[in-house]
Image (cartoon, rainbow over all chains, first blue to last red; front, side, top):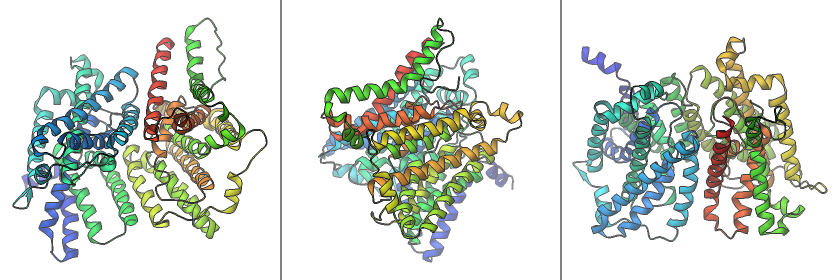
Length: 315
Length: 325
């Protein structure tokens, strides 16, 4: 009973409950058929949302107005860079991943440079940056033969006993992110800045460096996500990151992170990502048309935010 | 200092450099537009003609209307990330129901403005982040647009086609339309007493509440106005393109935000300028494609040009603001 009570008190439990509910609804529709395969598929797709979601979570935790709108463009460009550097050969996989990581980190650093030098809200800074990144991607990606090396595509799709290896690695990564957030000076600084930037500054937190690191981290995660996506879907394209603008923000908010900043929740990102992916699977299983699917996705997100919300607005 | 419309603030104390900086700052949107026009005139003098402007500013009316729509939510310290897909949805309704069953079309469009008003109420009552709510709504509008018009097509009502093809003497229609839009909204938001209340709801909500005004009502009115101008933008767009597509307005979300900021709007504090917003929209409309074409820059870089202009103008504003202190 005590265990149950502590569980209910956790803000992330609701996103997992939602995911479970959607899963049960789907398998009751199919009569129990394909339940396991659905979990496998949901895990492999949720990975990509979790990776950018964690980056976005650190950014949003910095406080009101902080959000990274350049993630979709970032993912698109990094996926093209990774595939170009790998050039279809297995020996270049690590170099390609590093290139995507560097590309994403550079975008994050530029984002913060704009925020800092022009003293503009992060929304506008990341938006302007994303315009430019998008154009670079369109012009760079044109006419490129963008296929991943077979070894990398196999790795991104590799499963052990129905569990995607990428999902296991991402779980390890999120545990590390949770430790960084709660137990390391960097994470505590992020939380402190989100709670009260002035108090954090007076207490000796290096506000500028922490914000710089956070935007760079978010960019780097976007970069690595782009490379993995291109591997998983066996090809890169300009639009590959488009859906991750809504997804990255939605999983953070649904997962129980405060949009007012200063309160982050790592497990919730996983629950919310699984919820969103399973929701799409459910709507596909029910056989609804693309229009109805978009409509219901939007309504459910607005509904969940309405129920879960109630804190100070993001901006 | 909330009125930052160009030309309306002749500085009262000419000696203070702060006042001069403020004036310079309020002229920035007009200066950016003039700069883009000069560049076009220098690259291709023939473009500066009745025909040239009609062509170059072809899509300026819907962009300006969408920018004004976005300006209203920004005046209330919120942000609408769904305005682009909303314009697309309105376009689809305009090209189908408004032509075939005008009554149904009108009801649906008025209803969609009502949905915007409800969103304003919801965001205020539940204290929700407008970014997330409107991102969710962008999916709703896109889904509805696809349901209304699954394949690109439809046709604009004849009266709308006639209106948008209007060719007044001497001054091209887009310029007249931009002037009218700017003047009407400027009067409503900057010169009427309720306009001051609306801007105040973004500038100092606490003071407004203590003075007895309903913040719920201001938010509902601001969102309803956004819906109204979104509807006008979608209809104007279809009047020009003659047929619709569910994705037709997707680019407008970011363009509209950029236009407001370019026009001297600030993200917080109810500092917006309708005239500036229209000028910002015109600048973006001109800089995005005609200028690049004349400079022989491939269309790949169109989006980047918008981003670059935004960054340059914001940098100029920082330099000016530094003197304002």
